[in-house]
Image (cartoon, rainbow, N blue to C red; front, side, top):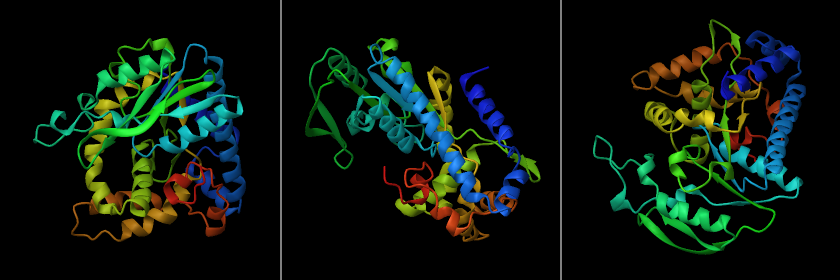
Length: 330
């Protein structure tokens, strides 16, 4: 059994233990006005998982000074990395962050795809030599100049920031290639603690067994991007196939390299996402090329009992789901 399969099985066992292991039973709990109780239970479970991963990082702190995190789109990587870092601080560690996006090669050196467009997701789009030189220097206790990539100019510029790893410091990095050993060929594998983050839950119910986590992530992305990036639901649906191809190429082949797997699903996420996503999907016209996918999502959501505004208001400001609906305080 792979680590991903084990994480999925553990989640399934937990759902059975609390008596909500099908969509029908989830709907029953919400119709019985147990929504806030369920939200609190899911959040408590996730807090234990964050703490457990932080414990692993702490136990390996003498050899693993670098924490690398990756996962597919809309898995809640940003929130999860912040929560894990917070739990590390509780243990006396001091997480420091360098964004992998600052290690892109200059625009003229960026590889292109078969259509002649810049392929920013290719491993070759990363300045691997500079990244490895900086990581090696940090592990030797040296101070580095932290790079900054100017996406308008298409090149690295001086950030004016420096970094050095002190005794209790841990370096946190997150990105699509983070679990790929080819990103860090100069670093001893034992010096890196790898974490894979994804929304792994699947509740059987309704007219089909909803085993695909991709639709849930798409719903998260639609809600978040409409709110924060001005990207329409239609555009997100049309881009999804390309996003999935990138995941198949750059993320999924390396998922089992992780020492820890964090499942970012909550039992209440579909009822929550329905509240925000259904009106957005209903707005996609029948003439749109995204219409069929929108109807597929709506057809499934009709089997889901939606959360009430009062229940949504009870979701903590540190919840991973706040990354998508707003109101997060991390």
